[in-house]
Length: 78
Image (cartoon, rainbow, N blue to C red):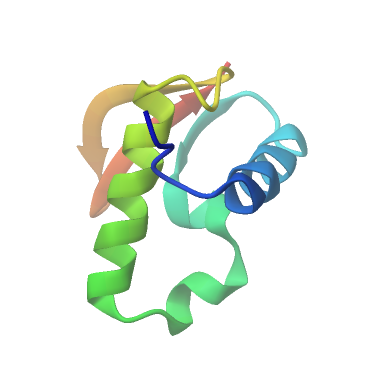
């Protein structure tokens, strides 16, 4: 099965996650400062790929809470 994101992007996001304390977050906080410069369609696509990667186990310290708040899906870093 092909990963929903390429290996370099997964590694970049894993590194950003490792620098965070456990707790809830929205994906743009992990993506980083370039998020606001993306087109809305790209944001939706990248966000969906992150959700798929979380569900596929590429981010073992992250779980999808199944909640949405503040305009986005809420994840939890364990």
